[in-house]
Amino acid sequence: MNIKSSLTLKFTAIVAAIILAFSIFTYQFSYLFRKNVFTNRLKTVSGKIVVNYLEEEKITPEVLQLLYAKQLNRFPNERLMIADEKYELVFASHPIIVNEIELLKNLYKDPRSIEINKGDTDIIAYSIPYAGKNFFVVNSAVDIAGYEKLKFLKFILIILTGTCIVLAAFSGWNFSKNALEPINNVIEEVSLINESNLNQRVSEGNGKDEIANLAITFNKMLARIEKSFIMQKLFVANASHEFRTPLTAMKGQIEVLLLKDRTKEEYISGFSSILEDIESQIELINSLSELAKANADFPNIYFAPISLVEVIMEAQEDLLKRKPNFKTSLDLEVIPEDENLIETLGDFSLLKSVFINLIDNACKFSPTHHCMVKVSFDKDSIITKIIDHGPGIDSHDLPNIFEPFFRSNDIRKINGYGIGLSLVKKTIEVHKGKIEVVSFPKQGTTMIVTLFNSRKLLEKETLELDLI
Image 1 (tube, rainbow, N blue to C red):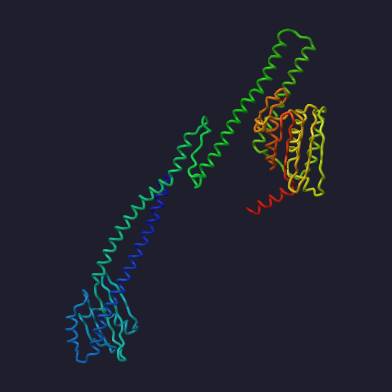
Image 2: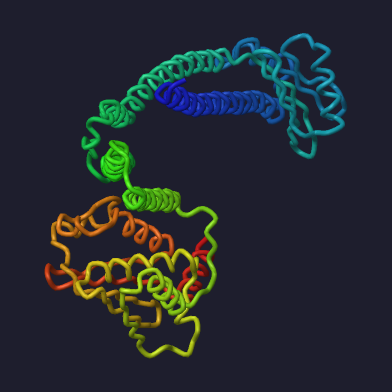
């Protein structure tokens, strides 16, 4: 069952239940009202007869019988019986039947009023005190007019209930159709979107209701998917280029070596060049593996309190061991006495890899192979600036420097794959930090890494738990 049919059925069922409950209540209330009115009228008529008999001494039972027979406002099939407290019959409009005798006996035992309904006949039995004596009355009649009214009311209620249910079903169908129309429009628009037109977006309507929120959310998802597709295409194009170029070079070197016999030195030189290319490819593959882990948010990552100063110092030491021609300067501001202000929660090896990449890039692109590392502290964060005096980055390239395989045309002659900064950004985001770039052509570049200190991170986690 689709949503439209389900909504229609539920709406109709709710309206039908309300109307049925109202109709039943109306009918029952009318039934009780008829009964009370009719029994009160019976008591009024029979009470007048008893009072006339008691107040008028000259009225004999025969005269009373005649008066009763001539009464104009009698009810259909009316029966009246009056007895005194000596169990003697004072008046009977018809021959007494067993039920009436039983009612009299019950009145003698308990003089409280009795009201009984048998079929379409209403029977009342009650006592009338007069001049220190009790008189007992049993009166019954058929309320033809009342039952005709109830019958008509029942017919009207059935017709109205059926009509209202049909109208509710029709209204519910139209209501659900109109309510779901925006969703159907979204479905139609979404069905037209495929991998070839991911730039297309869904109409967001008035931008305020739930359907608009759904469309806005879907458009945001489309934007992320479009970006992922673009990244994937760029990745495939760049990766294929990075693999194809060195493999082509290795193939050419091997073919040259195989053209004729070579000296030992020529073979050693050729194979050494091929080995360098192979090691370069291994390094590229390792970088791609790290990038894949980063995109999976680094599974099995372990966060612990670590000193960021120690991370930076070890990163410098490891980098200088591998590249002794690089030079770095570390500038520390006043180090706080509180360890929580100089520590952050993170993975030591991942953060170390971040600063190795950043310092390596700064030294590599600086003409003197020298960079400055400045570390400062505030109450919430640890700010690290890696400063070089290289060629800088053009403003149109700045938005793309963290994209995998992106390399500016100005630095293509320098070895690299354009993967390092992608890993750096992803790693810093996993550590809930941020990285900013300030660069001007021919003036150098400053990478600014901001990480929360342990105290701030613990406060945030406590706040999140309290909110949960």
